[in-house]
Image 1 (cartoon, one colour):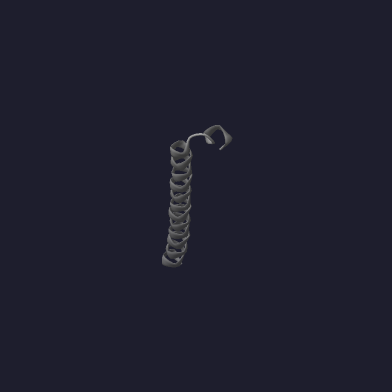
Image 2 (cartoon, rainbow, N blue to C red):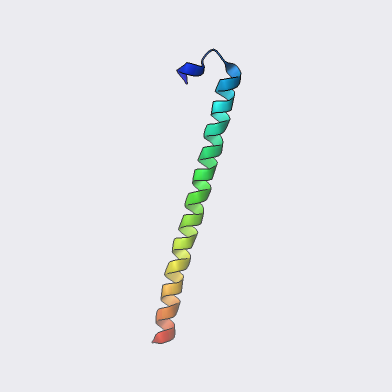
Length: 51
């Protein structure tokens, strides 16, 4: 952040970029968790179906 200390617009743009990347990261992990959950549920249902 020190390299942008003289340019407020650049500092603001950098901050917005960090916020957006953070939101994308959270969304990615939410979807990944959901897919892992669905995979486990599919395994459980398949085991029950074949027994």
